[in-house]
Image (cartoon, rainbow, N blue to C red; front, side, top):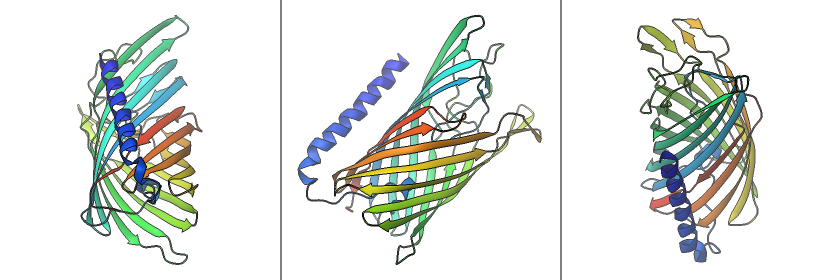
Length: 324
């Protein structure tokens, strides 16, 4: 039933994309495309502009002797402690993001994700396999973006960001597990920790290309869990990429993103095997359906053992108020 529900949500999102494309196709030949989204170095919304962005993400993990401990690998929330011989994990995340231009150089954002996860645990030596899935709201996030510099000559656009992640999703603590450490009836859908992320994003135009990149630091806030102080490792990340405009409606982009996450601490002691190195090669296409609507499709390939094997994401920013 849960799988059917998430499939219906996916179909609804695809219908929304198609309807939006049909409604605006007649305008697309005369209007310039919307710039890349903020994570790829896009400019901020102007004062008073309101944007709604539905998005859909699918990720697949297939690992041997997988060990994951309660922290996040944005945008894929990988939580809970699992030790198995083999695991196959499929994650579907449908999100709604609302953005508003407070000032010409200040933008606010609220993101609400809904997550479905299906885990298949395989023990070849027995052999046995166990399947468990779960569906629900993930960790809600809020962010502020401030444009420090505007592009001029050799100087790029420079944007500072501050993001806060809540712990609204089902946390990994207190869920029932079996002797092998598998979750039995339900899965964690959030990290169980508040987090704060600060970063800088730059964007430099070199017509017909745009160079973009970012650096960020993610701080997971420790908390007491039944008398045990759990401090998830913090994350340092960077990304670099280039977007190339084929014409006024279509652009291609390619880039790389990497994150290093430190080891989790329990009562001040670092837990062995809990650090992560996640690197992904990103390739995507952006289609400007109209001046105020753009469809962004991204495909990510894992480059390290800690990365998802493959990630596919669709985003559809819709301008509700004001025009670019």
